[in-house]
Amino acid sequence: MGSRLPLRSPVMVTGWISMMKQAVFLLGFGFWIMGLFGITGALASNGSVLTIESPKPGQVIQGPDVVVKWKLVKEGRVDHVHVYLNGELYKPVKSGDSLVIKDLEKGNNEITVQASTSDHELLAPKATVKIKVE
Image 1 (cartoon, helix red, strand yellow):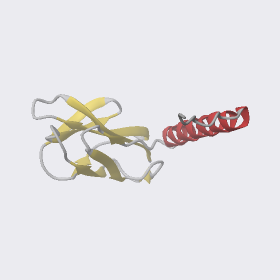
Image 2 (cartoon, rainbow, N blue to C red):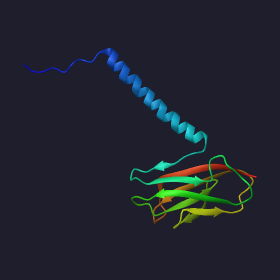
Image 3 (spheres, rainbow, N blue to C red):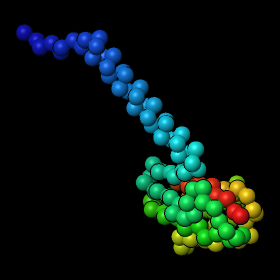
């Protein structure tokens, strides 16, 4: 005689679907919170990871200059990073893990660091922080 797989009860299936909905909701909520506070980081499919260590999200900076420090775990085609200020390219950085952005305008500013190939093709690892300059 052949063996039969046990039938799943509607309660078991409903419970599983409910758990999956909760997991998807929590994941989406986590990404929403990160965006709300200006915290983004990226994990590329090749394993590269990029985070901004300073300044911190929402930090108030005194003066027109700010030191941006990041951490990049290079994998695959990642060669260097591009630093952006308010959506505009500020400077590509081939070596090191920090840069001084000079003469920031007073008010809210957004700094983005994004991984790039040696041909300046932008890759998924990317981190953004929003700050205020007084």
